[in-house]
Structure formats: structure tokens, C-alpha cells
Length: 418
Image (cartoon, rainbow, N blue to C red; front, side):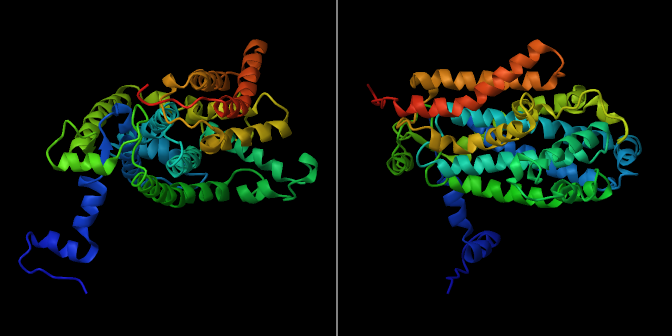
């Protein structure tokens, strides 16, 4: 039976604490959730991602009020009704479009920060896996949202992506995947139409956002026990350092409380970020809106060059240089590769890449290779030089996993403080 203290103040806090343990939650998740002192602004990317997702939810709700998930009405509802007839509809669309694009820039920064500092290493595998689950969920959310304006690139990008699932047909790969009609089942028709648009609308506004919210909760939950990593990969005794902080020995302590100390740093970084965000919303929103998509969808008129949004270009370029069957396998490997990073990296060291010899070279090769893949993925595959560069970058990306396993298998343990 819960203990009720009638003299506790304030009443609202007392009432909630007696029923859901409010003060315990505040202590465990907030005031006594300890963060290493030795971290930089890159550790604020997680909170920025959560804030951007919140903005996407709010702007999406306003757009949902006027959007029509019908192939005859969808294009006009977005490009005429929302942009011209609804007060500030253009602003909500710009916010949603810029947010959907820039969220992936933050995701990639967050991901490469984790790789650079070894934040996926032993004890933190679930943090990494839940984060990669969020990457997949955000990718699915972005793809489903890209279909909704029902412009030319929406239609044809959807056609190309769903065609990838022809790998499940019995006449591909020697009949290994025996699911005839899988693509038609996925689309709800032989070509994208009302059923297709309705399904992606439902995924975009309901199922995938629920999955993202659940994964965000899981991701923050997985941070609670192993704690956040730090710039040097130091093994901090959090209980001892927290005790020093509580005793007032704050210089000696290696940690700070999440709230209000670290949260104030997060808020400062978010303030700088949102200045950039709204600058893009008002002055350079066009980077998030493909001009081809301002033409209504036409199944009889194929665009000269079909390509995905910039954040998918690297994986698209891994697929494109190869034959259909091998390209599908390469594409699958590219999507799954990052999930296995904690198990491919066999090094005993949790340290920044700058201290890890060959791993430092591997990290920068990975980063540059993904940038090259992104650049090549936007270009038409007609130039032999660019095609050769794309093929080389794709092969290199596929080899980076085995290379990582080999170089980390023989990586010497770093003696801390040496």
C-alpha cells in the first residue's frame, strides 16, 4: 500500500509521486543521471534529433489537416491548397521538408561521432543497435513521406524502389525466394496507384511514427546503465564521481548531472542549430524539394534521370554499378553492414580513432567513400569516368567490413595513461 503524506507540498507533485513515483523518475532519468565532463557539442546531436522529430510531428499534423491521400487530389492538395490557400501552409510545408532532409544530416553526424569515439563497443551494443533501428525507421518514414506529394519523382522513385523487391520473385536468383507477385502485393496493383498511396500514407502518419517513438524510448533507456561514452573512452567510476559531486567536490568529480548542467549545454547547441534550421526554412528551402516533383505524377512519362533524396544516394550507388542480382545482394549488405559494427570491430580499445592507428585510416576512408558514393549517386550513369568512380567506391564500401575485422583483430591494447 502506498504511503500518503498529507502535509507534502506541492499537492500536484505529491499526488503524482504517490502514484507513479515522479520523484524517483526525476532522479533516475534527470537530476541523478550522470554525464561525463569530457564530452563536446557532438554529444548534443541526440537531443537535436529528438527535437527535430518533435517539429516534424507538429508540422506533419498541420499538413495532415489538408492533405488528400488520393492520386487525383494529392498533388493539388499539397502544391495548391496547402501552398496557396491555407494561411501559412507554405511555412509548415517548408518546415516539414527541411526537417525531413536535415534530420538525416544530424543522424549521420551522430552515427559517425559514435564510430569515431567507439561508442558502440562492449557494453554499449544495445545503444548502437537501437540507434541503427532508428536510422532504418527514419529512412522508412522519409521514403513513405516522399511518396505523398504524388509528383513525378514521387511516383517513379516509388516504382524503382518497389521494383527492387522483384528479388523475391521465383525467376530471380535461381528461385531462391519463391514469392510470386510480391511486388504487386506490395503496391496493391501492377503499378503505383490509390492502394499504394493509401498504404504509404498510413505508414507515414501512424505506424512508422509509433515505431520511432518506441525506438527513441528504447535508445534513451539503453543509455541509462552503460552511461554515455566520453572523448577519451575513459572507464569512469560513475558512482564514485557522482558521490564527489554531491559532496560539493565538483572539480574532482569526472561527471555532471544531466539536469540542469548538461541539459543547459544541450539547449545552447539546440539554439544554434535552430537558427540554422529556420534560416534554411525561410531562405534556402529549395534544397529539400526536388524540382522534378513539382510536376504531377505521370506513369507514361519517365523522368530522364531517376534518383532518391541525397540521404539515400550512397546506398543507391552501391546498388547501381552491378548486375541486378548482385546489386540486390550488395544493396542488402550496405543496409545491414552498420548493424554489425560492434561485432566486426574486434579491438579491445574504447578510444577515439585518433589513438587507434589503422582504425583512424579506416574511419576516414569510410567517411570519404560514403561522400563519394553520395556524389556519384546523383549523377546520370552515362559518363564512363563517373561510372568507374562509382563502381570503385561501391566495391571499396563492401570491402571495408572485412578490412575492419582484420585490422582490429590485431590491434594492440592501449595502455591508459601511458
